[in-house]
Image (tube, rainbow, N blue to C red; front, side, top):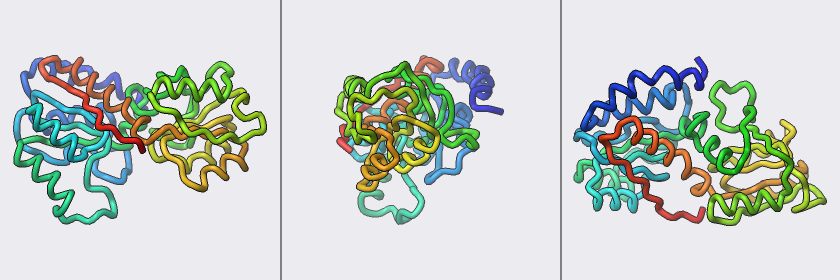
Length: 277
């Protein structure tokens, strides 16, 4: 089953949720798991319900990252759950619930707030994923995958009517409300015409070489490393570093909007904790 086919299989479950005044954390997680096809991804963290406060959910706070400031905002608004892109329990991090990590978990539990997080499934979703939402907002049409063998691609290829590098830079700034850092890969610089553009939000700067391999004129992601500058210049591909946080606001907002539409009894509030990275 493709991800697009899967979208059509959840109508009945969504309809069932609409009649509920509140959801249990596991019910909300199951719906999100199914819609985002979370089980199909090998990820760096657990996707789904990460902290179960065992309290009915009537108000959800959505945000990019489950930082302490977002938790404090959820407490202030008396929310029952937080739904984010970046949650907890990443591979390789210490397992002990102490220090900053312990303080975050303690605040959630003491205030009866559940935490749900979706990482790669929210990047890759063809309708409400970070890549799809950013591409649409920039007027780019998703036409394929950066890695064609992936059934659920986390990076995409897009096309558009020919646009100069300078025009794309201005469009990104208008949409994301921040100026991207641009590395030009050709002598034409800002006047270079672009029409095939790779995209993968967040910290995916190292997919730049794959974008060049796939014949892209430019590549959009969130972060930049020292090596990225040299790679873009030597590969002859323009690189747009648009901010990890800025490029990944769209998916979680779209998921929150969808939940609100499917379950009108729930209150869903997006809170943007500013992050310049």
